[in-house]
Image (cartoon, rainbow, N blue to C red; front, side, top):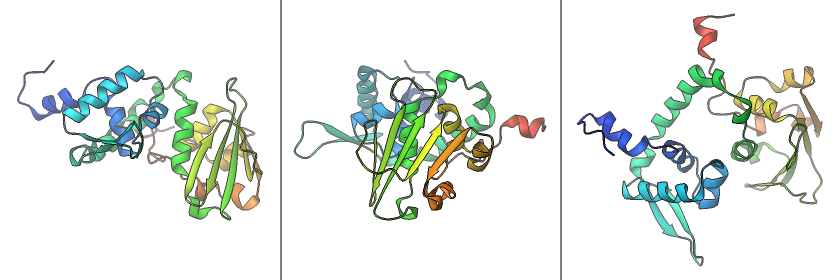
Amino acid sequence: MGYYQFCPIAKAMEVLGERWTLLLVRELLMGSTRFSEFQRGLSQMSPSLLTKRLVNLEEMGLIVRKRIPGQRGFEYFPTLACKELMPVVEQVGHWGMRWAREQLTEDDYDLELLMLYLERSIEPGNLIGNETVIRFNFNDVKEYPNWWIVVKGDEVDVCVHDPGKEVDVYFNVCLKVMCQLWMGDISYRKAVADGKLQLVGLSELTKNVERWLKPSFFAGIPPAGDIVEPT
């Protein structure tokens, strides 16, 4: 259903205003190309709706669909029109950090999304050796409380089953605190000092987490309350 307005904002919202669409664009711009990857980043989105939104974006010229060589599935890539939405997505994120973060609820702390972001945040060049294994033990998660990130060369993989490799760094933490750490709301040093995080492993890695696990792109943006009504 269109807005029947010549305003360019109205026309843009006809493309981007449907539920999940802008978040799907976010995943495209973050490098997701396969259906399973979109599902990881949008775990609450039904497969049928995801398929529908991908078709819509292709029809609107925001994505190109290509068959995976030697397989039955497809990969999806952003077009120039989609790539030019990056500044829009960034500004929405900035606004959200400043004005909407106080509306976070306990249900918003999505473990699978966090692990996807942590996977994307690893800096292999700042790790030690050719292979590094990082284990996360979430003490408040009942289903799949243990996760591993295995970094081998430039390849980074996340798994919920023990890969059978020696662990270099353990994160013993609750889900909410790990989200806050990645978002830059609290520092690793303070979380350890306050007993909210236990880091175990090679000291060269535990003392310099920010060097090899980069924070969110939006880390450091203060909420509006800190500016409008500083405490």
